[in-house]
Length: 366
Image (cartoon, rainbow, N blue to C red; front, side, top):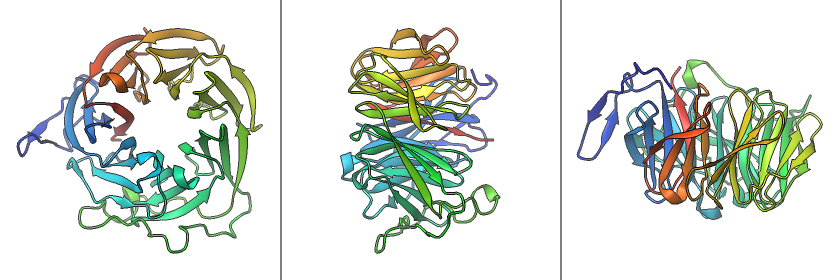
């Protein structure tokens, strides 16, 4: 549990709108997307109550918060039809001008690292970087893989991982040693991704820390074949392994990142797997599936099945509480998010934050 002494203060604005006081909200809040309602809800993890709700843009799938917890960015997927990220001011609880990705369509996976929003554009088989301070897409890199879906970016900005669903592969993308001849950037003639109109996130260095690391330069990609339908994946907290859940095979591929190869394939019985997450201490791995009622829990060291926890009719997004005490799992068909105690491995609560919840994220003030 978070500090029980943290009490959210709410200011009620116009009818039906809850506005958060930036100085009195909890230091960590859970962000929950509702696909049907097309909203982003801000949830107090201490009370499991919704503190605020704002429009998410069309077909919201994934969400990520800025490092200072002031802004959120939502991918508007549309199965490859849409080309926007919705920006949200988390302090004022209002949607800002959308980020226009131009020719890049089907944005899905998101990460916020180094002051930038990293995203996949599934229809174009690319990943990209959006710089909120400059309000533009400043870098694009092709993967050459079908349905590049989810993305993980290392803190040092020297390595990225993507899952490529229809190619049954993982891409390990690394900055070339001694590279730098290529400048990267958006394709010629593509809009720079600037938000339109007033209310866009302020310009200037993020968090007042000066310029952040640039993605410009040369990159090498290693494509690692895994199981069919690889989508949800995570990197172990020690940075040594990728665990990828293969939805069509029901298996989990374990990839040694240094060796860039699969070292083990688990017969995990996770057909329809959607997301996979390590606990913060790296001891357990949770896998959700939209094809059944169970949350699968594995021991990361022994690779053994620990428990199948009944949570609903199916599930998608998974997020771990920053202190490692709980996990939150979006049960999309059941219109709630379940709260799982990571010590007892039991369901200890439910959150109602709109119909068909999916993407989850944390906004943490430091």
